[in-house]
Image 1 (spheres, rainbow, N blue to C red):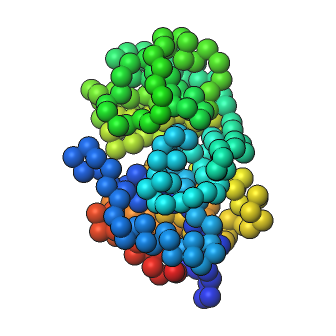
Image 2: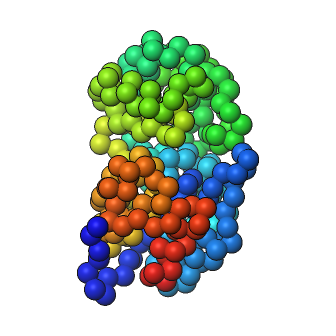
Length: 268
């Protein structure tokens, strides 16, 4: 593990949401008061707190409300969307043509649910997703309509496949022109090439006038790997997959044991 130089103090704290700041218990979001208090201490120290998540913009705002964050830059959709608030101002978006990748995937998982992000409002979907998995306004369309124009993000969700099967499928297809992130369930996020939470955070630090070396980042998922490597100090949650822990400079406790609070308390 790589540890910061003596005297190093973060100027920006980049935080994943699901599995890092909050847990899901019986289908409900649970965020401890200790997490809210820890984030409040960071901000009281004059340090920027930046949510960096795979959630879409409405889901980021929900998390910001839970954290009692009253504004600031946020990274949404795994880096494809960067925005400031309030009021919501899109700072940076990246789109790509997802039609070929989606067609390839649906040849192998024809029953999959597909969602494309409608930046700022929610998603357009071909069928219902499990309750609570995606936030915002949902509009039903055919798959052809979903990918007719370039999009910032596509989610493929299959109830009958495992995360391992999805990872093998994505790798086998090559998915040229996209990055992909596989969740714990059969959930595949497609993003434009070169886009990740790290690329979104680079936009943020450029605007703030600081460097990646000044960032403390905490996350738990495959979509956090680039961010943890990019940050001056990247910390994986205790329940993170091994490859995520290996990408980090340090590993904290699990989300159930408030690992993010433990890490933030080291500095603030």
